[in-house]
Amino acid sequence: MAESRLLILNEQQIQQKINRIAYQILEDNITEKEIVLAGIWDRGYKIALRLQKVLAEISELQVILVKIELDKDASKLKAVAEPEPAKVKNKVIILVDDVLNSGKTLAYGFGVFLNTPHKKIRTVVLVDRSHKIFPISTDYVGLQMATVLKEHVDVVIDVDGQTDGVYLS
Image (cartoon, rainbow, N blue to C red; front, side, top):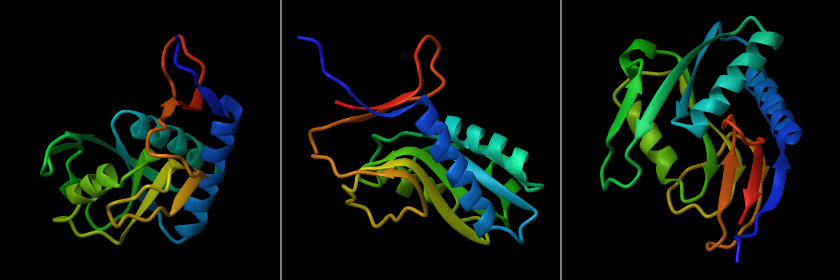
C-alpha cells in the first residue's frame, strides 16, 4: 500500500509564510544595514535564498548567505560553513531550517557560530513540530503544529519535477 501524505501547506501558502517571515526579520532588524542568513543545507538554505529575495524586494537590507552543511547523525558537531563564520563576525545571524523537530539540527547550527562574535542569533523554521528535546526556541515560524512522534513532516521546496509543498505522513 502506498504511503499516504496529507498536504499541510501548498506552494502559495509556503511563499506567504516566507513573505511574512521576511517582514518580521526586517522589523526586528530595522536599524541594521546587513544581516546573515545561515541556511542549513539543503532545504533550510533554499528557504534562506527565498528570504533573501523577498528582503531585497522590500528593503535596502544587505543579506549575506551562509550555507551550513552538517553531519546530523554525528554525536558531536561536524559542520562546514561557506563562507566561514569568521567572515561574518559582529553581525546579526539568522539560522534557517525547514522543520524543527527535536532541535538537534538547530543546536548544531548554533555551534557553528559559538566561537565567532555576533550581535545576536535568531532562528527561522518553516514548520515547528513542538517535539523539542534541546533548549531551542524559534523566533520566526511559518507554521506551528502539534504532531505525534511517529508522524513525519516533509518539506518539498525547489525540487525538479515536484510541486512545492509541506506534507504530513
